Length: 260
Image (cartoon, rainbow, N blue to C red; front, side, top):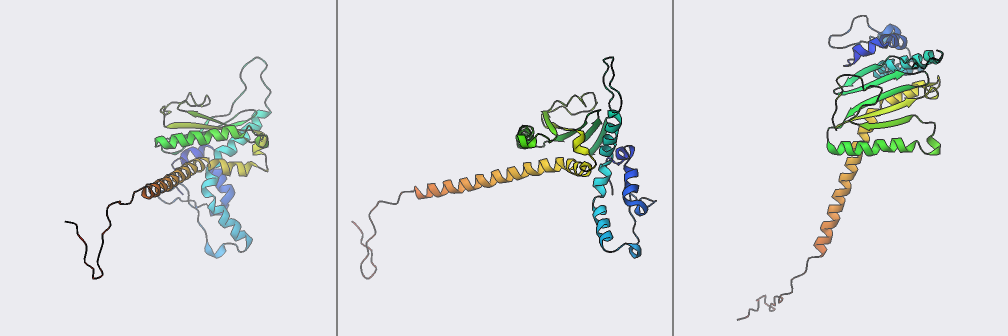
């Protein structure tokens, strides 16, 4: 497997997770052009449910690598939670800001606090229509939490162009209209021992989830526009007037009457 952000993930414990999840299958030598290699002896692969579990774990190779900064942030939050709150008015201690530049011009930022973990996505909208659709779609995320049934969902904040306060001090942030920042505020109930794995899996897919629905919305709009144009053409065709000129008259033998 090769990831452009592998060096950053290693700093946050990705290798430890690889050895934890795949153990003896991690090859000591990495294939040229890749960051990590798994090696299997086909004669010793388990059978039955163990084989199924192994295949499932291999399919999650990239997910497990990207889980490193999130697991570290969750552990840091637990450690910061036990630190006494300063009584002299100084700010509470914060975890390290972890940067994962997993795509061109896009990144994930993760930071732990005593009572929460903040995750910021930066995403680039290549087209003007994508930016409009994305803004509407993300605003629904913000408004949906106001309903009673979703009060326990993570808080979602969206800003266009201006980065959130958590990362505003970083250098090299792109400042243009085609850049958006989505902030998720995760509280301890969102990464308890029973929900931690699902939270990591879902939040990693947010960028794909967002752009997938933007493309689906555009495709739906285009199909509706084509359908509407087709209906208008039918109406125009029905509105055409038939010719009111003198009808052609013919004899029994097929000759045509002409007027002189």
